[in-house]
Picture (cartoon, rainbow, N blue to C red):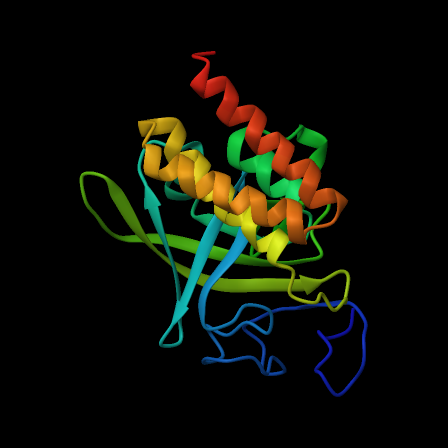
Length: 222
């Protein structure tokens, strides 16, 4: 298997053991990734047969997660000590994983660093991490991440699309709205869905209808 291509080598696919010297991404040899970038990376995180939209934080050469307690995702990461960040550009899958569960055949097992980890079959790229709790409060865990392998499966360029980004925002606000029914969150959801319908393609419009359906069930007490 080849290395992940640099911008000067043209498109392609391949895997990289991130602890090896050939990796040229940001950070040290033990913390770098050629896929994720500085800031908060919006990904679909996978654990054992479980997926949810998550933000992987990369700052000062370190990867981290901030996880609220009580979710299956948080429980799995704390128990198993691993996490996979899946890069994907299908807004429907973001909505599906924000509000529900994927079928088991949506996941692909990968034996990495002596452990079986699960990534999404539809992932365009993924980064596998070892995960460890560094601190916790009554409500949340602070998780440090160490990348151990990454793969680019589809090397494509995506122009910025406000409709896609708006679906991510609507899904984030939607998960919180289901818990507290805050009218300010409902306003934000409607605002972002309007952008998705105006600026997005067909998949964004499908995703917008899915969000509306879930929120409508909440409002109707279903």
